[in-house]
Image (tube, rainbow, N blue to C red; front, side, top):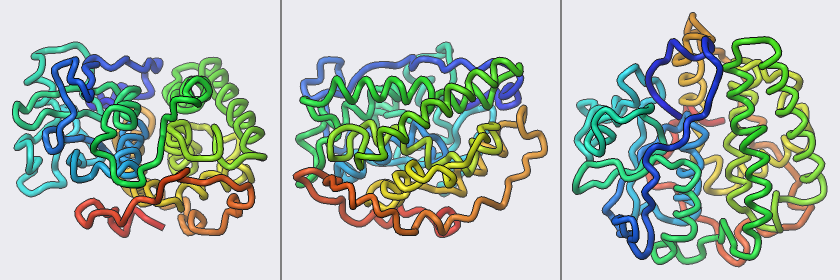
Length: 337
């Protein structure tokens, strides 16, 4: 999710920009960035669904000690994501006030917005990558030497073609679809995006009616990518983005599926509803010029029984759940049910 130009949201048609910095951090270091414990810092916003994928993956794989985490203020200004949640308004590891400083260190005056997730090389202070589509796949496949014991296989080799196909549909119609609807500048554009979104959600509900997870009987990258949109659906997309044919809570299968994942260690314990709501409603001033943040929806429903375990499935496959959330990374009470 990019920072800057907040007043333009809702005043021009939405176009998801490709990541500009696509270097990869790999086991063999072929792009010049070898996997190395403690060398890199993952910069995220808990408000951003694209960044939340990386937060969930990092936690499921047990990479907390190997890859440190910086959490930006959910309300960025036109200078980009800022570290105003930290003492002295600076990231304590990188020493910078704005994520844009790491982008500028890599390439001055580069074309494009300052986006999260971003991985920064701590020794040089340079951005390594903001390739949100690739970061989590590499965490799952290139960082294996640093995974915790019992880490799940989030991108299993034998299932990758099916995972890729499901993720492509989810990306086009759901992950990106809510933005195309929310930032539409014309009725036809909005209605087309909204129709595709809800048709895809209905197809996903049909798929999930008889199986616990999207691909196979374990959690994969595909589930992570769908979850980060579903968990924001009623809080922001239904009202703020006008994706209001029905609420998530009104779809029995998807609501149960989302609750199942939310209650799985590594998912709900990374979600901050306060950050999510304040970002969307306060930053997108082209859509919500008053900046008023709604009180609802009420959150306790996320903790109610989902009964999805009756479908079988093994959340972590042959692995185990992640341990407790590190104290410094716990979501504050106001962001949880």
